[in-house]
Image (tube, rainbow, N blue to C red; front, side, top):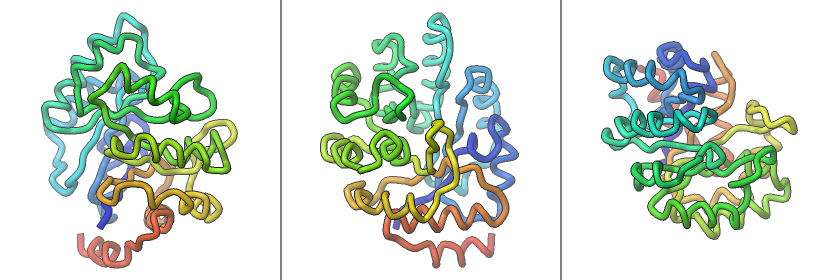
Length: 241
């Protein structure tokens, strides 16, 4: 059965503790700890030393998406601490200045495919070029980015065809024309169902949807529907947490 969870950044930006509080009564087995801004990385390192993450069987970290070139080596050094825990590290390829630095993270590094705003990492071919530089890296497949770039889902199919064996995590949401993450709609679910069967069955699904309260369960159910699965048993289990 697939594991589902949320990105802390989608729920509470840089407030990791608040994001976990919002999920207290929701059954999720996966969590992505998001430090999209460089100034969130050191606080995240401190947070994980005291946070109880035992309920999650899958934990990943999202690396900063924008920083100065002179900060890059220090950022990778900090991220190495998470890799030593065995946690995957998601990175935007356009944030990489020196590939040689990131090779140090080896197979723990997951390259995420990009939305239409970016100049690299959007297509199967562009990702192939990145993997020449990072041959040991895996992939975080963002199905919403792929749909926004090509609504026919053809490029999504090509990415899955060419790089499906690298996928270690999936991001799901709905991405607007202005490249903002939004809640999943039934229309998006139908589009995602066209290719979701090509995603390896054991890959965790991380929601990047801004949600709260009852929306959390609703979004989890829509994500499961996108992958033609059900969370009925998981919702019952979650009610006793």
